Length: 127
Length: 127
DNA sequence: CATAGAGCTTCCAGCAACTGGAAGGTCAAG
DNA sequence: CTTGACCTTCCAGTTGCTGGAAGCTCTATG
Image 1 (cartoon, rainbow over the protein chains, first blue to last red):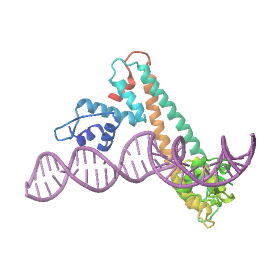
Image 2 (image 1 turned 180 degrees about the horizontal axis):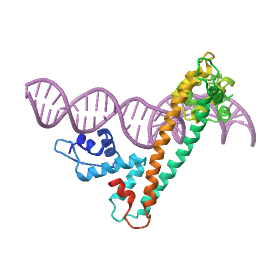
Image 3 (image 1 turned 90 degrees about the vertical axis):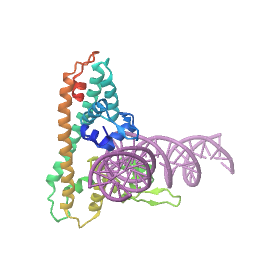
Image 4 (image 1 turned 60 degrees about the vertical axis):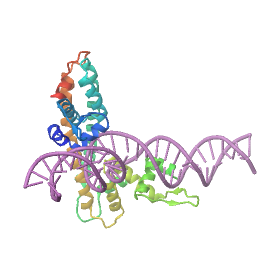
């Protein structure tokens, strides 16, 4: 299967698939003409990556997860650890954004938003 | 005032302050020896940037906000619009992360995390 | 006055994770 | 045989810094 069909199959842009090959994540075979040729195994990995990236795992996390995916002797603890760490990061990020949102929301509420220059948002930034 | 004192004053690393000059945000005067020389006006702008960045505004937003800050004839509506847009982005991001968190949290909960290979997290990614 | 060390300068490279585009080879259809 | 849609590689750009090298300047000390 060529790259554009693989792209449709796994839901990743062809550019991204080539990039994943560049960084050693999924290396398909090649046809005589030099074209990439994806088999089912490659497609599984690409779909796996698409989902893991969709869950916000970093590419480096994905690399490890992919190797665990392929490791029939993996310990589920290893997978869980990565996921828990990632979950913690997401939770921290949420808290940070919520705090930003609260501040910003107050500021936006307090600004008249008319054609006069007085602006609590600017005042706050300049405080 | 030299750059390292300015850095202490505004809470930004010297590297960042130089970067902001590179991209045309705050350009201090120069002493005869070529050293940057920050006056109160520069410091105000740097503090403004530090706060605006801290609220998550992009550097390009900051550029506009800074020009509004300096514009005595600004319309507060212009400021409010930028802030509202940013607020919307933050809210979208929060929603996205919350959805990720929920999914990931379920997966983590369901994984035994022992030394056996069976792992609902991997199963989900490979589904 | 010489020198050591801190601080300043510029410039270049790299991070994450792609994305866009140029230049050129290949293939299927008409 | 040509057209157009593929494919290939490679290079540059994105965001917002950050680290480091090479080299100049200033200050304090012996």
